[in-house]
Length: 105
Image: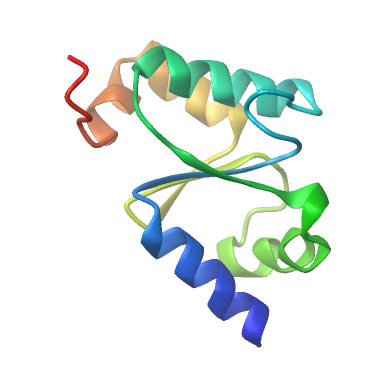
């Protein structure tokens, strides 16, 4: 189960972590792109894992999070959800409250 330990470590080492298709500079699906735009508009720093570069993580993250789709956003070690949930929380002003403050505002 070493890949699950690796996922747990990634989630615990990054206060805000997005598992996505592609990278923030080159998202490879619209949902990942939308999640990146929302996080960037909040002005928070975030880590990311490109699931295309790590097939083990891609397959096992679903087991770890019990969430079937990508992207997946974790804040302070807790799964927030996918693109639709991220956007909905942002539009309600809730996501901004959940994100750690980075001194930009």
